[in-house]
Image 1: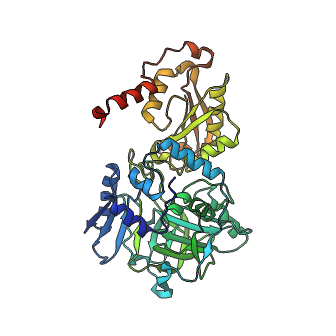
Image 2 (image 1 turned 60 degrees about the vertical axis):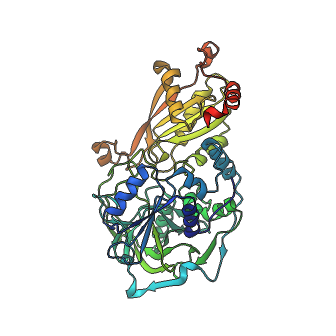
Image 3 (image 1 turned 45 degrees about the vertical axis):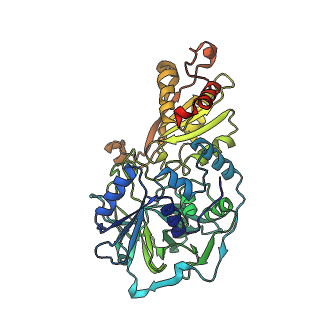
Length: 478
């Protein structure tokens, strides 16, 4: 890790522009055109896209696809460009396991406070909020955002990314599902008969946004974890109305409250699964009491796009390090690499191990199945491979499944795990009954322990021979 981090969206944009990874688009409409162009760019693994001269919104800008390109992600998060994805995940896992929280630093002046809008002047429609997909239930302002909330009985401040539908100029839904930290905090406030204070930011510190998507344990603060990764405190300003910390350099921030029983219809929304998986439903709303924004504010958004494009990150820092850390905490032996593939970097987990005893691969499979519940709880397939297979290389993982797995002996299905309403494969009957569960397939793609020494030898050239050949015939491989 190069430890080169950006404190705001603008400095990252400048770095991406310098690297040739920023595309400017003029004249795209907020209604579907911005969303469609963003989808096409993401499918092509293209550059970050800055929309300018948006009809009806002179001078306003929207930025999308900030880290859908792997090189852009490496720039944004201080990752060495010549280090493998597996090594990066390992490095992040080790760092996450050794976090020493760095408290936020409160400042008196902040760029986000350059403009403050309150009272009758509050109007979120001053920003060109896109309608991303044709069948979305409305315009979604929260698609690459940080939702900042606080525990009722402690100092724990949570930062997470939740979708937010714009209802009117002063109202949004904040969609946090069951078990999410903001949902837990919200319900505790409501049980105590109190309003729930919320801050939502748009266009913030890139690393804070990345860490907000991790499934950190309850009580482990994203602000403090971001500060540890950076080696310096995240600067914040105290929210005048909620008292919540607002990142000082964020482009746009809103303060408001959620009250029990105050709901409006939310959805549908084209999700990272590539489907409209959930129907419109009455969901709690946030009433906006203040808007703060920088001069010439940039609205950052990232609409989910259909697979195989990346809705978020090519290197899945938002899902893998927390799983790998949990596997290490379970004292499992011989784990050499962990990676998660598929839409949203969630459905298919691959783990490479150095086999050390009979039943080792099954032990790892069973524990990983229980732990693969982060994100939106849709981890369906767990594959364990030998340590000569790079788990980040999906083609190599599939080859191991095809050539090393005896279907009769090495595949199991375990039922009854938690699922997500976003899973499009869930039957209407289960969905209507509230049975939000799924099965998981455990695939042992390791050479069978009891006859591994008799497994056919690999026809692949040895690593030593490959290196010698590359050196001798360097001009061939330029």
